[in-house]
Picture 1 (tube, helix red, strand yellow):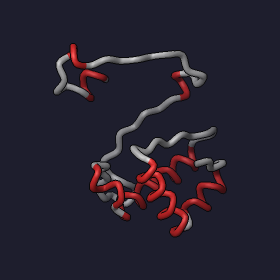
Picture 2 (cartoon, one colour):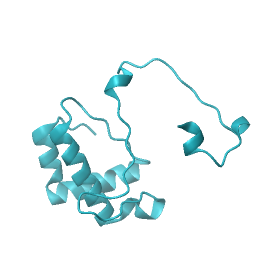
Picture 3 (cartoon, helix red, strand yellow):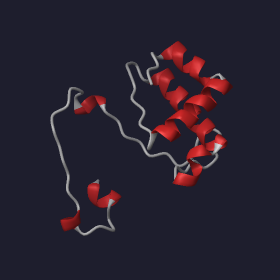
Length: 107
């Protein structure tokens, strides 16, 4: 996986760190998405981090996962600015309320 993500880096330029975790590996899932539920492209380059359509698609993806993931979820953002933009957009659209019906939301 590392060689796929960082194929452009020589192996001597890459350092990895691993430590124990309280969540078993069987409970962790990493996914890469290129399209949202509506079929539109979702790309999270810096310029798209404040694109309302991309953020809306991301919110719908998270809501869909809330409906099928039985336990808790953790969603990472590249920055607090990006997190706050999404939180505000989802509050205005009502998605935060929909998240809260399915999961406890802590920011």
